[in-house]
Length: 255
Image (cartoon, rainbow, N blue to C red; front, side):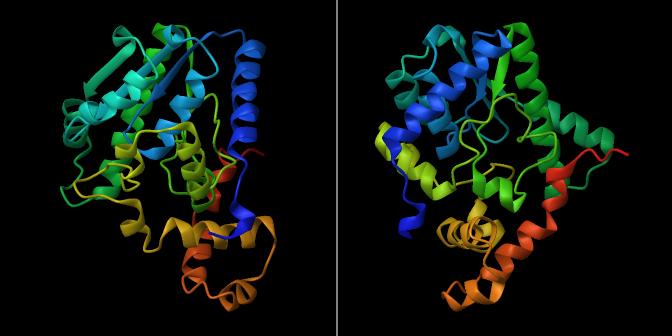
């Protein structure tokens, strides 16, 4: 990892927890709902949330389609002392399959089905938020945001985004500092939209390379030729991903 992507995790923790507290105070909410997938982003976001507000004000929803990961999440949930009554472990399979049937989505259309999954999760999180008079805490990082690697009005829908300013590799740095359990650190990043789904396999490049390229292109305003020259072989592919999905950052369009 390049030194330019190294963070001070202690400073970031103070900054982010103050940000969460400030938003809740300004918006006059005390409860927060978060979707916990089992991946690094949601684990770090939950850990930061627990450092910001009392555990009894946190509502965690594990919304799975294939197989529940709740057992692998127990070390994290127990470490953070999240009350059992505030943890929901819910299968979305029936809801997704019913909508798949209504919309006549073919079995092989993974993207459409994945979008349905993400939007059903969003619907459930916001219903849970309404039930508990809460805001929804998002878990998107800067890598996913810049690549447009999310479902519009699905997994990117939230009221608070505590780690969107951090690249994926920086989230891992923060996770180690926060003591996120090893089993979570070892998980390959995945939106969990189909069996065996991993983000890096779908993207066709690693997050480590993507983060460096995105940083050079968007933050340092380097041109593609300069970035390729720095020995990032997938630079053009990474920037093409980002440019292709950049429309997602400007919705809805208005006159």
